[in-house]
Length: 232
Image 1: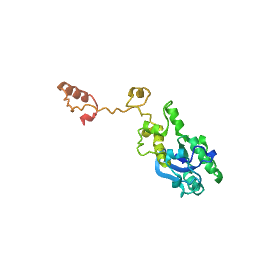
Image 2: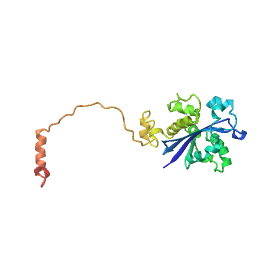
Image 3: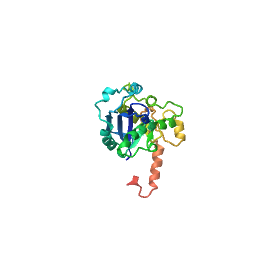
Image 4: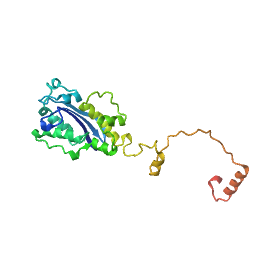
């Protein structure tokens, strides 16, 4: 079975090389691309100030984080949750850069960018030239954004899990039937059988009685068959 971890983070700023830290982690566990119901969510005291620009994005203020655990206190539980799961991240380079900066002091091996599934890159390849932000993809796939006034790691991970499923083909993943109602002819030409959902006109059953000459012909046929079932 394929185990994946859809992950999102919120941070104090945009660059860990300038001392910025992770302040929130949200994760959703998937098996065979479907949520299991298991999640990981943690706020973290970054031991530094959150920039005003970052607060404008996620709304997480310094006062709120003051009594939260520091990264050293949560790193073990976080890595246990990740386990052998493959990371699924939107704009993976950003999050992995921060995660590896946080993990470095504790001896954990760094996450490898080329081993993660970056849904931003998947979306850009699938829809070249179209907006590929998480908000834009949610709108494209009619995923409800009404609860998302600000960014939040767990909420964004939940939305991303839905987007990821849609990028894989949605509920029809692997069948290639997503647009059959729009272009049935093309689907048929490609060798895919499309079951029609068009309703058919109901007709009353009709009885067809055999004619006399047909009955006589049937009797003659039976007479010429040795040990026929009709004669027994």
